[in-house]
Image (cartoon, rainbow, N blue to C red; front, side):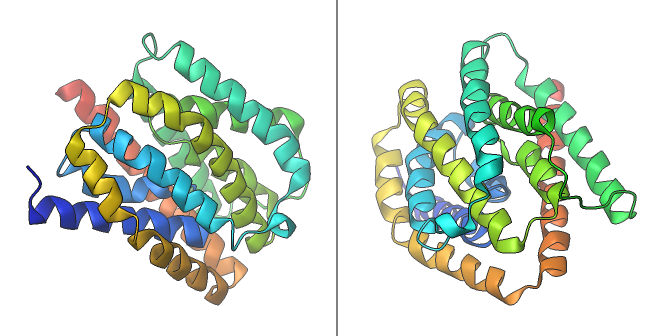
Length: 250
């Protein structure tokens, strides 16, 4: 049975994720997932979010038009993403999601620490192998560990793209990925009737969350936005690390 606490936390989690998609293009959507984990198991959370991600992404694209897409990067990232999703789906039963989470968290924290220390510099030099690795890595982790954001963010943030181009490119990338994932997720997780009701209740908060995030994006200058993005990367990495470690302890 649904209760007020479940509904409130679900709406809060969906709002936070929509806000992240509006402000940063979607790579940090995992920040809102812990709220959902308080009231439902991971599979039901995945089933709830799979269609809502698509709605959020399509709504966010109203703000991130084709003029904000880095097409030269997407030509490499999108095919690689599909390859990664296929690999993640095919080997889902063989890969240990806990180990993937821990490895991705440690890599992300290392790169973020280097950036905060000034040990890395943004560069406009593009690398095909790095782009392919980012796309494949994002596809695998989004299927296995439910977080495709860090591999993509580490690649795109390193390019020093203008903030609107970064957000628009990220938004289109995750729109494509979530469209591909929605059917497998609904098939695997088998949403309950309560989950479908929660989906319907959550729909109205999406437009406001995306719009509010977009307004924040407009108010921040590029240095502030990148600093905030790296801080969110650290939060995401800590969440992955927690999931991985507690998964082994449990």
